[in-house]
Image (cartoon, rainbow, N blue to C red; front, side):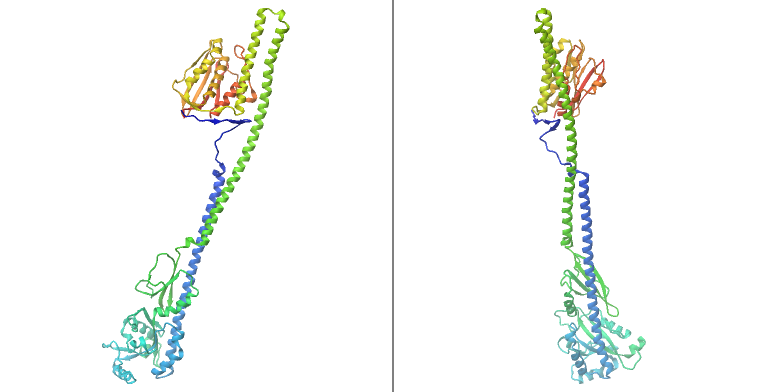
Length: 600
């Protein structure tokens, strides 16, 4: 059998149980609204901070890219100016010897101040009919094995005749006809046609030995014969004498620029240089990330800028890895600070709501306590008056019996004794109800709900009131289900039924009917006690369950009551979580009904 015990603690009308309650402030719309507002504000601040960080990274990439662009374009312009100085040497002298060229190179100290230049040379334009004479002249100057390569026949020849430093790798380029190779020829022809410096596309320099091969390029500045017009392309082609040029190995040139850029470089920023405007593996000239020429994963911010030398020579791609941007310290500080502040504000708001609710409850409780105490004071006053009356009656009867005993016959004496007995019985019943109510108010009645059969309890009550019913020949019966089970405190239910059935008999006419009924409904059971008695007037009905308005009415046979029975019934029913009410019509009887839980 399932059995639960709850101790009723009741003081001044307030019920307390040992079950805890959830603080409503933590579920309040206001506190949750504060939390939601804090989280939304945190999300906005995180978003703004993230965008600011991203903009900072983007601006840094743009700055680094522009800086690299200026460094490369400045270096190319400087190299071009050196070559134009070489052109000036030919303009100042009709004949420039190999020794003159070497002296110019040495005094310019090009290798010291301009790292990355593979050589400083001059390539001569040689018509086919002067080829043999040219070769004999060079051989006679101390180079007996000189020849022009490649050696196949063609209409136009060029030859590298001066190249400083004239040693090491550069010896491989002596006598090479650059005009015979399409990429070089395009740049050489562009230089003559435009009379500007021209940079070639990517080539493999003839100086390469097969080890540490690097992408290369060349810059050409045209040399024209003195005194000839240069206004049109045709005139410039007719006046072409040769080219002052320099070959470059890309990594050697970039090394000096890279070292200069490293002084202001931000970690994570890398760059690639592509030949021309096409960005592909085939056109890659240089990558600051060696071994990863197209490393795109994690490169969120990329800036693309051209590097110009009279035309778009190269394309500069600057990138920055931002894999860890979400773990940036500033972003994490904003995130966690926002979360912590949001939670603290939520807890503060919840506590403020709880404090307000507690204050409201305390105020409400104070009002209820004041009302309950006032009701009890009135109740005690009324009760004192009701107790005093029967005692006055008994004292009066006893005075008659003692003072006038000699004047009373046996029949009169018996009548006075029976009256005294009735007064004593009614007073005892009133005191019994008062004591039970008092025990309930002071918490000395335990609430022990358990499942049991309603009919069995009703049968016990019918037996208890049988003597009272026989006096008025009232029939008391149970007409509910025999199998109906409820989950309640059996002693309390017995007290409720005994009071209601006793009242029904009290206000029933002789030969009347009192019926107990029980009907099962979802989660609850409705029990009713009906009689065919005098009924209840409307103004009396309003006061039945109000402690401050105790109603005592004589029964159909003059029975008296304390008025406490219905108050006790109401409080016992409410302990079960139920309610009690009455349906009545004066002259036709009454039906008292109440609800208690069905079987658990």
